[in-house]
Length: 134
Image 1 (cartoon, helix red, strand yellow):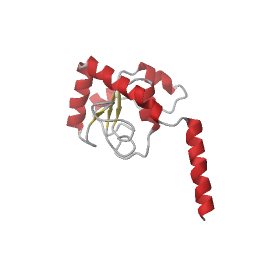
Image 2 (cartoon, rainbow, N blue to C red):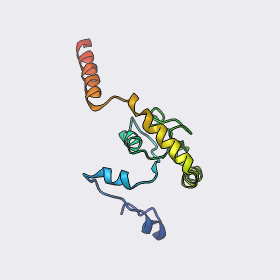
Image 3 (cartoon, rainbow, N blue to C red):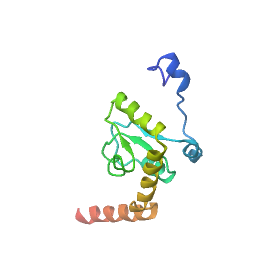
Image 4 (tube, rainbow, N blue to C red):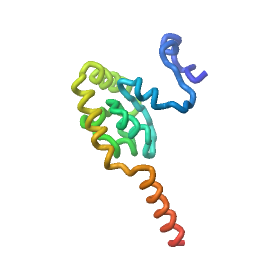
């Protein structure tokens, strides 16, 4: 049902997986990560791809383009542009040096993001400020 928009040949090669507890198994098995998001806030999946040293092909929507940089830590393609997606994907598949450079740069830049504890402290600070301002 989820793949009704695809023709039978496409349906044969695409799998939509349900929520799983062992998501790291999929990251470890992957060679490239792609995100075709049209709208995002600050998706953690980008940092997960960075952590697992995956070269990434992403749309530069809000929240994504704050985490990775085109041609430095990921390759960008315009939202909805399947031809550009295909071109960029072909570049990644064919160029091992590019994959290595992007994934290493992305992984190296992870340190600029707060960990879960630091993020919790920041949220608590914002909540306190909002409460005190009312």
